Amino acid sequence: MTVQFAFDNSYARLPERFFAQLAPTPVAEPKLIRVNSALAEQLGIDPAFLASADGIAVLSGNRVPEGAASVALAYAGHQFGHFNPQLGDGRAILLGEVVGKDGLRRDIQLKGAGPTPFSRRGDGRAALGPVLREYLVSEAMAALGLPTTRALAAVTTGEDVVRETMLPGGVLTRVASSHIRVGTFQYFAARGDNEAVTLLADHAIARHYPEAAREAKPYLAFLRMVAERQASLIARWLSIGFIHGVMNTDNCSVAGETIDYGPCAFMDEYHPGTVFSSIDQNARYAYGNQPSIGLWNVSRLAETLLPLIDPDQDKALEAAKEVLGVFGPRFHGEYAALLRRKIGLAQTQADDDELAQDLLKRMMANNADFTLTFRRLGEGDGAAARDLFLDVTAFDAWHGRWLARLASEDASPEARRTAMRAINPAFIPRNHRVEAALNAAIERDDFGPFEELLAVLSRPYDDQPGMERDAEPPAESERVRQTFCGT
Ligand code: AMP
Ligand code: MG
Image (cartoon, rainbow, N blue to C red):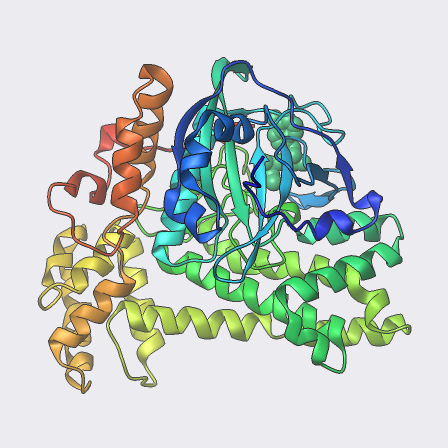
């Protein structure tokens, strides 16, 4: 038999207490929804194989490919601020790692692959809706240029899962730089297993932050680098109106990728208090809270690393606190730079942040659509954004100020518009369009709208004539008020 995956399973070479080894639970009647051919090629996997009967058997968990690790990973985590010492992959199995054509190592994981020793009361399965949702939104994030896990394939299982109602089941094949979470460190730290914390930190450094190993204090450097990547990631989230929805420490990737697309959503009208997740009762993970939660999460990582940083715990704490001080400035610097680019400023002037914040304030007061406001500012002289404001004079006042500021730039209007179109997407996965695509698949077995939306979202910065419906905010009757994690 030819080898279909050139697995090199570094995580599975860690001690046994890092995971449980088991095969996925087979499903009744797997059917392919789709294979992400471009991603497969990048990983050195033949997309035609994935789409074949043998490939579908692998993607559904019915056949474990040669060389696979087939492990469920152990991790813990703070969920909505409360620590749970044992979570782990309750419905996911890591098939293994491959090194892609780009030389980068990536995990290939089946999500919805059946119960594991970490399932607690769960059934180990995923419903089709959340599978399609993660597929759409993670691929949209990748096309938008954000660090994210990817979707390699999705299948239906031919089995129902029991949620509030019976729903068709699915399996998502997820690709990630790794599945090491802040919660993975917490799992071992909570057990006082500093040997494991050290092994895990060394593994994460070798894999994601090799430059940290060359610093005088590698674990402190690792903490700083994780903090910096989280801060940049969250700045990028805010720049496109993304709300993760469940920023628990078990959903916080040490590699700095967006991971675990549950009740995530993109905001339509700009408001920092926006929350969609049905389980986020206290708005802990609201759009505007994400930076402070990011720092909170990285602080939980810092706690686990203290014994590695310095034998004197007071000194370790002081050093860690100092390192965590990078988070705020890094976030604010990147966020401000992104906002400047979003309003088309190529040069930096003292009042730029205030100018951008003034726009946001006016957008908030006037229910202006976040995505369309910035996109339209990049058309002509930007006046097309005016109609998005309830009180158009609120826009006009800002617009005059902005035009005056633009006049002091060297860049040509053409160059500015090109730059603005490259950072302000026309298309985001709007909740109502995502839901319409999911409903067609679930209720009518019609995957056409899913495929169409996926294609549109693969080119978010291009105008796509005929696809205006996917660019527009929802009509009042289409508005989605809540999203669900569907687990
Ligand atoms: P999540 O909210 O998806 O990040 O999951 C939190 C925890 O619950 C993780 O440990 C998951 O593996 C587990 N989990 C979620 N859904 C299920 C399920 N259907 N069966 C078993 N475990 C699950
Ligand atoms: Mg999770």
